[in-house]
Image (cartoon, rainbow, N blue to C red; front, side, top):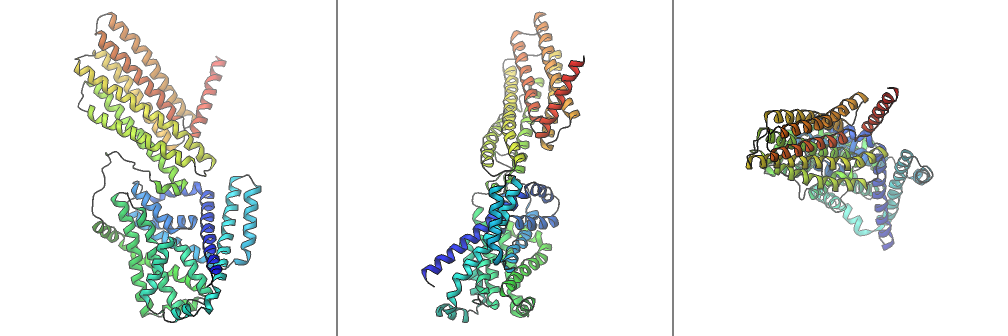
Length: 555
């Protein structure tokens, strides 16, 4: 091969890889909202997890990307290892879609597909149309890349060293190693299988040897996942090992099948086209491996635990539970995950608020240290989530998703402020104990009343945020709770002033009481902001305000 052929081959690989990525990104953007719903399926059972793995990989056109994403999910606590096994198996089946597309050999329509795709992307403003254009354009680039690779390989037919190598290429283990090394270097099984199909299409690699190279490619695709586990939790490393075990065991099974059964003859019966034969071999390998190994999913999990010993960090430790950098490669999933992390942060703030309020009312400071530690975790989450939101915001998002991410910046800030007020209450409790300040029974009763109402509002706000829905009736209830907190704050400040005048409590205790009432009232303000943060919440709020205004005008 000349330097020109080599450069043409390199350019073909570049076009092919870019086409797969470009088409996958378009599919992902077009199916964004539907991909989010798959997260609910992930948590149901491992049978459906296989389907999820297949669909996601068929959409993003990369089993390596799906497996890396699975590692991110395990690292973020979204799924357990048993569910991860199903998704990984489904991803291996999903990656066969690329080889099927290549086997169809639609090279002749590639230029037309690129032209149509570019027209849709440039001349149409509707996002869904541009996403469809991206899919069509990427589809055309895949086949243009394949055509370029194939034409660059033609001189190999007359290249004697290559002919000698193929004639003597009868060692199955050599074939496996070639496939493993190729995929490990390129880090894309779709690309290496495309190269293999291009070589076979030119009559340069017989199917008898190509199948062993194919088996090695399935092992080589695990390299990306293994590399991605650097710095992750123990279970994430185990998920990558499960992926490796699946493909090693599958390769072992099929090497025996190929050696001792008329498997090659079966592939030749399927089609006369070497490209179709390789595609069929790829599908059979992954489907059969999944059928055989799926019943032993728990065995794979146990084996991975033996190979990667260790314990997971406890939930109480300061860490991100649902977020992982790897998930950013799939924005629809990243958006769902960041919402879960924000909810977790909100629940921590609510827990701190309850603990601090009880410490103050009951003059019990046994939980003060825990409250302080939890506040540090809340501040940690505030910083990390905000940083993650900035990264998501820089991605290509649907309009609704972009607005949702924008609202989360405000929600995180409101939650952080609730945590600050909880810390104020905790410090007030500690001061009251240290200075031996006492509140009257009536003052404690008023604080309990304020706490119960505020806690009710906070629970409703977190629930509204989690569901991202809020009816007008629900918004009225939450709004009335917030107004009631304001009314109680004014009332109890006045009644406490009366107690001060009647010498029923000391001045220092009185000041402490007034300041804590302010903390309760501010928590209510931040809670109502969280409740109305979603798009539907904002709409319900506007409808409620319009209704209130109409009532005032009529009265």
